Amino acid sequence: MRSIEPAGPRDEDLLRRVGAGDEQAFRELFSRYAAVAHALAFRLVRQAQVAEEIVQEAFLAVWRNPDRYDGARGSVRSWLMGTVHHRAVDAVRREQAQRRRIEQAAGLGPGIVEDPIDEVLAAIDLPRERKLVRSALGELPDEQREVIERMYFEGLSQSQIAERTGLPLGTVKSRTLLAMRRLRAAIGEDSR
Amino acid sequence: MIRDHALIDELLAARALDGLDDHDAAVLERELATHGDCDECRRLETQHAEVAGMLAFALDPRPVSDEMADRILSQSRTELTTTDPAAPAAAAPPDALAARRDARLVRWQAAFGVAAAVALVLAIILATDAGGPNVPGSVVVAFDGDAPGEVALTYTPGEAGALLWATGLPDPGPGNVYEVWMFEGDQPVRSACLTPDDGAVAAYLDADLSSAELMAVTVESAACPDAPTTDPVFTAELDTSIQ
Image (cartoon, each protein chain N blue to C red):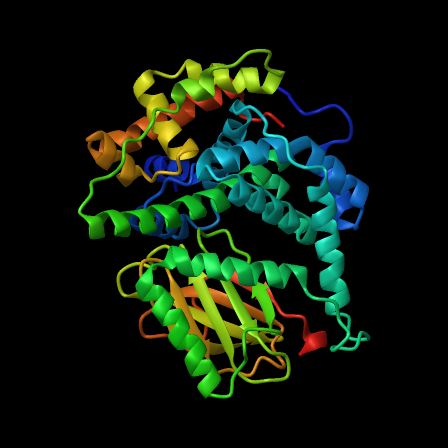
C-alpha cells in the first residue's frame, strides 16, 4: 500500500465541502487535479480547445453533482480522472467514426499511428506519483504496455487494438488483464 | 455459492480503461446482473477503476488557465440566475452554458456525419411543423450518465414537445433499443424508443414536460415496455420552477 495523497485537506473532505457549496474547496480540488485532467484530455483528443472544454465540463459536473462520487468505489482523483477519460474517449471515438467515414469515402486506409510510449515515459524531475506510475508502466512487458497505452492514452477499444496490431482479440484481452494486475501490484491497490 | 469471477475481472479491467467493445459491455452487464449483489465484483471494479485513474498521473501536467475555475463557478451562478423564477424571463441574462452547448451542437452535427445531421435537421423541421419548440431561446438540458456517449434535450418551458439528441451511444445490443422516460414523481411515462445510427440519435419527443421532474434513458427490448425494466443509463433533472 502506498499513500500519495497531496498534502492538505483530504480530497474526500474537499468534495464534501463542495457539496455544501464551498467554492474555496472546489478551487482547491481544481488546482490539485485540473492540470493532470487537462493533460489526459489533451493526450486523447489532441486538440487544445476540445481538451479544455472536456476539463471544464468534467469539473462543472463535479461542482453540480459531487454526490455522484461513491467513496466505496475508489478515490476522488481516480473518479475525477475516470470522468475526464470517459468524456475524452467519447470525443475520440466520435472523431474516429467521422474520420473512418471520410477515409472510406476517399478510398484511403487508416492513417499512421504514432507510438506514444516513449512520449509518456520520457520524464525528468518527476513528482512522486508520476514517478510511481511511470515506473509501473515502464516495468510492464512491452506487449502489455502497448495494449494499455493504446487503450488508455489513445482511446482505442480492444477490438480496434486487435485490428491495428493484428493480434487476436483474445490476446489483447488477456494482455489487458495481466497488465492491470501488474499495475495494481506496482501502484498499490489503494493509493488514496 | 462460489462464483467464478474470471470473465468479470477481464471485462472490468477493459471497462476501467474505457476499452470495452459494445458487445463485451453487454456481456459484462449480463454477468454482473447474474452475480447480483456481489462484493467480489465491487472489489474488482474498484481496483481496476483505481488503477486506471492513476494512469493519468503518468502524464506531464498541462497547465490550465486560472480563470477556468472562475468560469465554471460563474457558469453555475448564471444558470441559477437564469432559472430563478423570480427573474423576468425577458430580462434574464443569456444562459452561457446553453449557448455553449448550442455551439457544441453545431460541432456535433459535423461529427455526426451526413446521415445523422439530416436526421437532426428533420427532427427540428418536424418540431417546428408540429408547433414545437424552436432551438433558440429554449432550455438545453444535458443528461448525466456513466455510460459512454452524450445525451441532451432541448425544449421550451410551457410548450409541448422536445428535441432529444445523442452521440457516441453504444449499441444497445441485439433486439434492444434506448427508451426515453419522463418521471412525474415516481411515475414513469414512456416518451420514445430510439435506435441509434452509428451511436447518434436525433428525435422529436411528442411529450408535455410541464410536470416532468426527471428524464431517464434505459436500455429495453425492442418491444418498448410500458415501464422501465433496467436501471437508467442516463438521467437529467428538469427544473420544475421554469416549466
